Length: 304
Image (cartoon, rainbow, N blue to C red):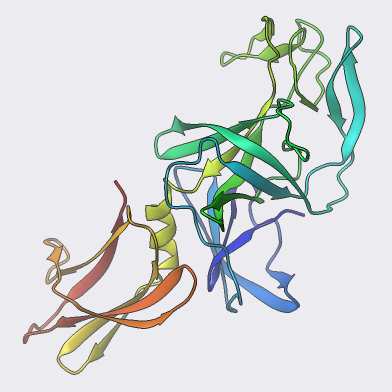
């Protein structure tokens, strides 16, 4: 009923608020996949799902915070377009129709990026009649789908569909409410942050907006989940093998070691690339044991 986007050989990204919407099995490119586990970001609306089988292809991530002004394509399983909605003889948009689960796409321009709460950034685009032939917004069912950006000719995943402006009324009491894709809210009532209903006014159209969770500022969490670090020993060396995101200049990886799990220091490593593909690489870091009776290793991912 909802969508996810593969971003690494064994992981796909979706929205946390829809939960495990697809069950434990799904078909992708004709292959049956089994979901092993899910990791929910405690700060945002992102969830990463691990699969037992490997994806043959996956989306590169947008790693730079220059999304504003870029043309974007959103993909989802939202509702059909319903009847036109008019107020005071002015057509303002369309009601949400039925949800038949069909995958659809549309486009828009990223207008803003902002911090919704700590460690949780959103992008915003407006349904504002700006001339795009396939301009879109979200509706119920679009959650979890991907928002893709054209970055120097490369299609990159820039966001995951999370929220949309919804819940409008023609009455100050807020009853009844309706949901719609509207390019002008003037004359309608919407709820403010305190829950009171306010009349939308102004000299210029006030369009609704939609909000993807921003990928570029969540690289540290994403990389920590897909790393899948595994420890082994090769002679006089301990090894830590992990999956690394490529082309993310703002992201850093550090192998740290300890002898007591209390005091940690950056380990001196010899790194070997085991395999690589479009967007990720499997790295084996070798750490000399130097006669140590015990050694603990961990992988730290950081993003300024």
